[in-house]
Length: 334
Image (cartoon, rainbow, N blue to C red; front, side, top):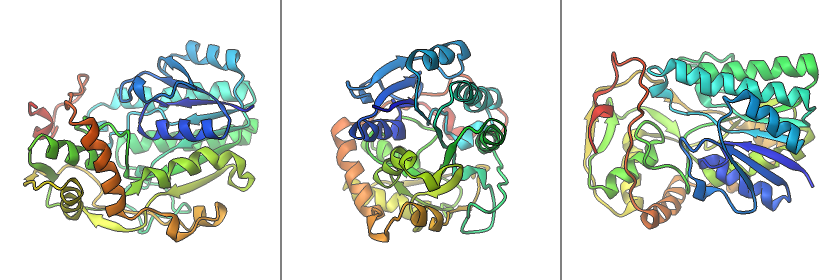
């Protein structure tokens, strides 16, 4: 039996990856500090450790105790916009914590280190964004992700550590934390609708994104270690069709069967248009177009789950380091 460590395994994408690994007969150890995930997300078949990847000593003990075959690193505070205002927190959690895992993976001769990076590494770049393009991240979150990508390449060149890097984008679906006011726009919209609040749109809503249903992402992350040609490669993964944020808001209201009002607030510092090319992953993993979930279908499936679990309180991040230019909407009370 293969043994895998999944960091962030109580979070959104991590929960789905854990479930797929269990179906693949992996023994799974979940490491999560529950800063964005929920203990209830972790299936009883997995071993759960509540702690942080920042704790290098703890990470070392886990590797020694369990002798992992694979590492799936999904733990991160993935709030691009907020990362400008929590720079120290961002780099400690998203970069230094990752280095702790890479160090132990080298020492313990891990077979493959699977890392979820982000489309944020591209910044404002040639569209559609392809893996061969030189990344130009524009926010601390994207900078940290790209730094980890480079470190993995260095670790492979120096020590032979195999890796697979995925760059997902705008992933949505069941088990997403809809109570996070700083990230995951679909979850934010659905939570606002449940609370009879207006849907908050930064700027004019003409920003374009391609949205990715979780079932089109998590299975391939989990199964990737079985594809030899994927080793030491980088893959964009997710949806192809682009939508404006305004179009997304309308589609979300339709999925929730609930009318809402759009509230436009001051634009924030973000990439205006971001969508990726997925030719590489389709070729290597032999994916067909019909396997991808249309937006209205994915939204309907997520909406059904959201209605069952109900709205969640939108807690504030309590360690803001810079308040200058912080969007006012993030200060508002629930």
